[in-house]
Amino acid sequence: MGIRYTKLTIRLFCLLLILLVMPDCRRAKDSIDVTRVVKTKTGIEMVVIPAGFFDMGSSKGAADELPVHKVWVDSFWMDRFEVVQEQFKKYQISDPSHFKSPDRPLEQMNWTDAAIYCNERSLAEGLDPCYDEQTWKCSFEGNGYRLPTEAEWEYACRAGTSAKYSFGSDARKLKANGWFAGNSSGKTQPVGRKKPNLWGLYDMHGNVAEWCNDFYSENYYEKSPQRNPKGPAAGEERVLRGGAWNSTADALRSSSRASDPSIDDTCLASDAIGFRCVRNAPNNKPAEENSMEENKPHNPSKTGLVYHDIYLEHKTTPDHPESPQRLVAILDRLKQNGLYPKLLILTPSPATVEWIETVHSPEYIKRAENSCQKGTRFLDSLDTPISPKSYDAALMAVGGVFSAIDAVMQEKVTNAFCAVRPPGHHAIEDEAMGFCMFNNVAIGARYLQKQYGLSKILIVDWDVHHGNGTQAEFYDDPNVLYFSTHQYPFYPRTGAETEKGGGKGQGYNINVPLPAGSTDADYLQAFKEKLEPAALTFSPDFVLISAGFDAHENDLLGGMKVTTQGFAQLTAIVKTIAQKCCQGRLVSVLEGGYHLEGLADSVEAHIQELMR
Ligand SMILES: [Zn+2]
Image (tube, rainbow, N blue to C red; front, side, top):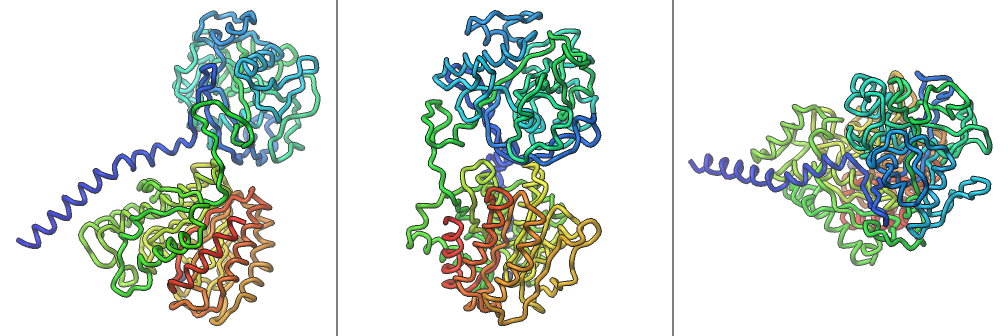
């Protein structure tokens, strides 16, 4: 009876807990949309497009879409809708549109009239006009409105996707996502009636083709710079993107390019040509006064810190080295030494099960949840002690990595440290191992790929133990370079130098096994001679660190002699790689480290180096 009552109580409690965290879960799921909408002074809705890399062009498209090349685009704002006729009238420019209606897009727009509208709108909002109305040269440094570059347009249209269209490759779905010859009834349609893309932009496919700022050149991609390409310096024709109400499905593809129809054969009648505006994200220029309400000026802290009290609720066994006290020691230190107020504190939401499933099997996730609910003391083996709230803590640990990644990708911080528990790098697809439940870093890498469309991730693992779970997840994957230094032979017995990756992933798994007693010099040599050249050749889009501090000279579990200063030096090397390859984008995630003072010392030195 007593036992049944207890079980019932636990179940009710868990149900209550689930109900309590549900709004957060929903929020986490919704946050797949990373963008937000702002309203400008004149009441126009714009989407804040996060900075990022994407693959521009298509290997399956026309010749002018080749070669597919990686492009970086700074953050910018883009009109949520094509510019409609109602907006144009405000500026006493005569409306050339053929299909008249206030909520339909402008068409029969020539490029210079679109540029004039951008200037008028800038002036009306107290911004600097971008276009010189004599030469039509665009000032990209200014804060005013302009036409998007071709790269900005395609990046925004794709919204993190790489298929033919922003909704996938099935052209039959176009009917729900845009207006084209197949469904438009031979005219433009009011904007915003079809499904928006993942970033909330409407009518990127169809309705009217949209002017870009770039001059058109068929072979421009061969010489396009990687950062913020702006098209050829001169030319005859300007680029049109997105297809229109009279286009075939093929012309509506995300990568499809067209140019001035009076000169070539794109079949775009002039009443099928409109535009939308962009402007540089004001956050790119912190000095700028910005009166727009939703865009409160912020003072970006360079380094973020992820922490949540639920991480302390993951209880192991008495006297277990992987104890809540580890995080208490870290937080106490950061508060005592004055670093805490200088960090941007990031409060996470729990990751959804869908995200955990990018690395772990549904059966294992369910087993972990049930084991915690039932009050089981260990998950899978004596290796991993758990408590009733361990599952929630583990979801929040992954969510913590996500919040750090989000903050970096949205340029709130350059890098971040996640003080999370339970650790992750031993957890494999269907089994808990070595104090780890979910593989925080591995799921973080999947999140970067799926959520932000980044393809190449570097994971540096300097925990004293080999990250067998992370190695297993990416062993065949050439897009994730896994580098590990670890004591060897040692738990978990994997991590030989000969484990170099399989299949296409051959060469993208680098193990540097080190004997017990290795020092700062040994680690630095491995980082300089093995990590640095491989990482610079690989050129990652983002760097993750599995930051275990159990190679510290005082650590209870490891047999290494790395000093606090040694960890600072390793940090500096990895940080430099991130600076050289991906604008410094780096998220570091706590793994092991069991000597409370050694851990606090090392994390302090690590964070200080990240902030430098
Ligand atoms: Zn470890």
